[in-house]
Image (tube, rainbow over all chains, first blue to last red; front, side, top):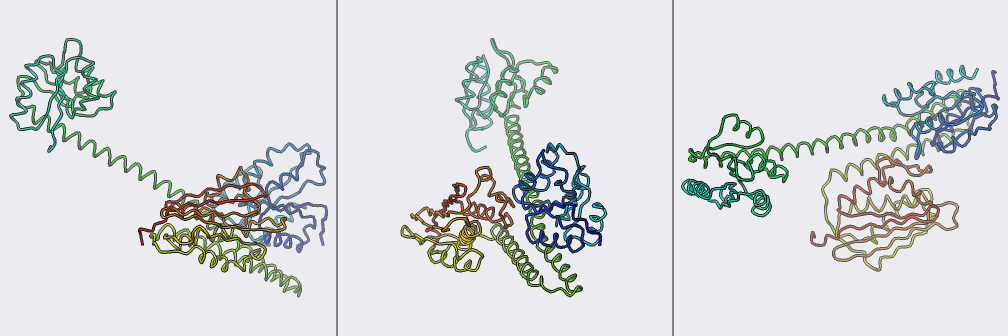
Length: 134
Length: 375
């Protein structure tokens, strides 16, 4: 068992069922128990503040694209503009049900985005997440 | 030419103008002419006489044909402009044609004038028709580009809304498979409930897409409608929707319930707005209500639908009718509902106004024509 309770994963998705599924996938694989769920971009952005401590910064953000009001692209813009004093980089991976070439290309070439997974999380995707958090 | 041609003659010599009149009479062209020889008279005649043809001498005491051409152009007057001059050098003639004159006739050869007039008129008519065809082609092109963009967006969003629940179901099935291998059964009923919810969502999206395409493709069918009965039917069909039992409804059809319109479209409009009132009720309020009232005259039907739900934020209110726009983060819909409502009302040549105060109320006022003469 390679349990790493210290690592933080943030799930950003408006679909509660998918959040349930992804949380369970990650927990069942013993990747971490420290999972934050944000169902709106506003809520996710609010989590970050300049004074925040290193230990509360997510190590990985799994970001959906298609959310109401603000979407995944808006999150990336706002996240980029955030003035975080602690420069620890959170790794951002897209987890979307969109397999449109436009989305994949736009996201894969985005400087903040590490990878692009199509839902549901596959064992390979979970392996990549595990490696990143090692 | 069956109507009378109005010919403006720019000529300082009345005898020469008279000569022109005689040649046209002889050619049996029905016409009336007006002679002017100054700049002011010319401008005035363009505005009041409104000529079909302009015949211009080249040099006049205080004016010339090139200037006259420019005046025509600046007044957006696109009628045949024919030079009728004494002697003229070839160079001058070419220059005038370049400036926009349609033809030139020597005064010594006036017999060519009638056919020159008819030919240039024909050319102008063809030009106008060609321009019209080009313009309408351009317009159609713009329209097609718009439709194509909308279609692209539609396919993108529709495929997302169709795929998302399917991917959820796939994920849940994978979880269940893993649990079964570990002989762990306690989550099964949760998975089951979630799969059911996802399938219901998929079903709702498909129904919305059907409604959307039906509105676009099918013709309007006018029938007598009893709004009271239709509203009660809609409420009954929505009674098992989550939250329907928490919503109190007040129906007021005292000022009219009967109208003539397209029943399937009216049903789409009402059921979308009513189901929104159920979905977006304010769960923090003690009592959620929906009130529907009408005012019906022989020409106009006005339906007011008000609820005390979560309301719509002022920043988003203009966008609520956009295709696939979801104004609230609490939205579970596809973002097609109000778009379909707006499109359907447009097809019925009606209007919809929304007023909303966040956490207080939302009021939709719908006006559609009462087509009693169609039945």
